[in-house]
Figure 1 (cartoon, helix red, strand yellow):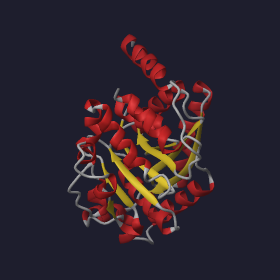
Figure 2 (cartoon, one colour):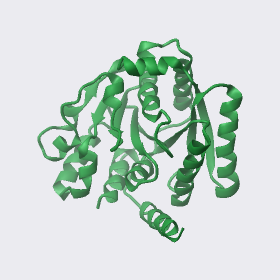
Figure 3 (cartoon, one colour):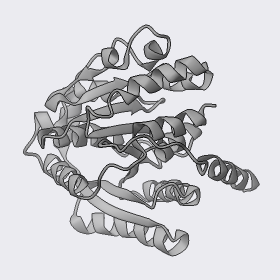
Figure 4 (cartoon, helix red, strand yellow):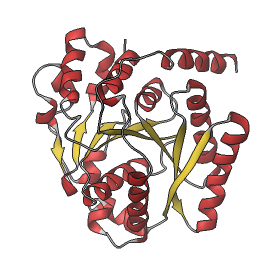
Length: 290
C-alpha cells in the first residue's frame, strides 16, 4: 500500500509540470486506453478512426501499445519501418506512415516508443519536428496506448488533449478502469475522461456498467466521467479480425459498426482542438523519457 501511494505521488508531481503551448491548433489528440487488456481497445481505435474518416475527417493513428502493437494487423497493413527509424535519421515520419481505409494514416510506434527513453536531444528534436509537420494535416490523432497504469501509458494519456477509457461490463474491467481514472483525477491534467462500454449484450447492461464508473468517480474522486457510447457484442468483430479487415469495411452494417459510427458522431460534436497543439503534446511526452 505504501509503495502504491508513493508511486501515485510521483506520477502526480511529474505530470502536473507546466509545458509550453504551440500556436492555435486544429488537431485533436485523443488517447484511447483501458485499465486492463482484452477489452477490445485497439479494435475501437481502428474502427473509430475509419468511421471518422468516412465522415470526412482526416485521421492518424499512433500505435503506442508497447506490449501488443497490432493496429497494423487489424488494418491489414504491413509496416516496414517505425519511429525508431525516424529518431535514427533514416526515415521521416511521413515516410514511415501507412495509409489504410478511409485514408486513415498509421504511424507504427514499435520499438521507437520504448527507445524514447534513450534518445539524445537532437533525436528528440528530430521526432518533434517530424510530428509537428502533421499538425495542419489531420483533424484527429488517435493514440492506441497500452493497458494499465504503467509510466508509458500514463505519459501518453497525460500528454493527450482528450482521453477515452474502454471497458467491458466485466467486474475486473470496471475495477481496473476505476484505478486508472483515480490516477488521472489526481494528476489533474484533464477535466474529464470519456467512457466507452464495449461488448454489451443489452443497453441496460451498458448503462449499469457506465453508471458504476461515472458515479464512483463523481462520488469518491469528484471527477467527471462521461459515457460517450456503447458497442454491442457482435460476432462480426471476430470475423473481421480473422480476415484482417477493419469491421467498418468488412461489416459496415453490423450492430457494432453502427455503434462505432454513433460514437464517432458524438466525438465530432462533443469537443474541439485545444491551444496545446502538437507542440504541447510532444513537450509533455518527451518529459516522460527525460
